[in-house]
Amino acid sequence: MNCTKRFGMALALAASVFGGAVEAATLLPEEQIDLILNMPVTYGDDLEMRMRENGDFAVTDLDGNGRIELLFLQETKHGVPEEAEQGNENVRSAWQHIASIPVSRKLYAYEISENGKRLDPVGIVFTDDEIDPNLKYLNLAYRDTKRNITYYSVSTLTRVGDAGYRVSIQNVSLQNGALQIQTIASEFGNYGIYAEQGTPEAVFDHAVDRYGNALTQGALSSVAMDYAAGCEERFDARILWHPVQALRESKIQPNGMKSLMLNSWEGFSLTPQKS
View 1 (tube, one colour):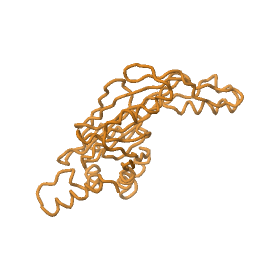
View 2: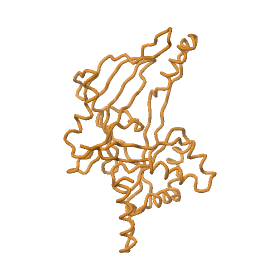
View 3: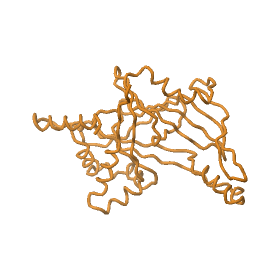
View 4: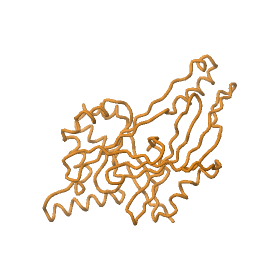
């Protein structure tokens, strides 16, 4: 159990001992999930739309304020080009790999309100390129203890054109009810297709930092670590995603939705890195 979850339990215990009004942050995650599943807004137009669409969902507490978030990540992909379908089986297989890379994605987030009576939409703020991060691929997390902000380092792969690609190194943080998205470096290239083997390989073209300055491919891998150098705490981060379809299907099982959301919550973790 990570420190955020233990803290939530301690607050809930204190509330039960001393009485008084119970704010959302004092409730256990299980109780907050009960609130989500019983709030009218949960079945409102916006969230109901997320439930009808395909994609993945996760339960988190990215800012560590004790109020859980419900995240949805939806991706759009392009199929195999028609001309590639006419190639041999290996070539088709290679293009199927490329077709599995999203051409775009959309991130939606909701958070329990302070009074525990609403599930509020979380704003998405881009400080530069409007590229929704792929929060399935967290490299690390680090905390600025002076400002009490936790940043998550994310590597986002996006298909560009037929066989081009972009890897965006991004910092994501939840601050004052909004997800702040900053792209700190980007790599560009394409996938070379070798006809006989039918194997796609990433062919590097160029990389730049957030100011447009050129980077070598080797320097790109250290950008996130360099960016985190001034922060006092570093963590291995994990978010456990499940298909939205599984959440829809779980409705027919007693407490099915709650169990699936709890499972996602239990898979969310920040593990301190050893110095």
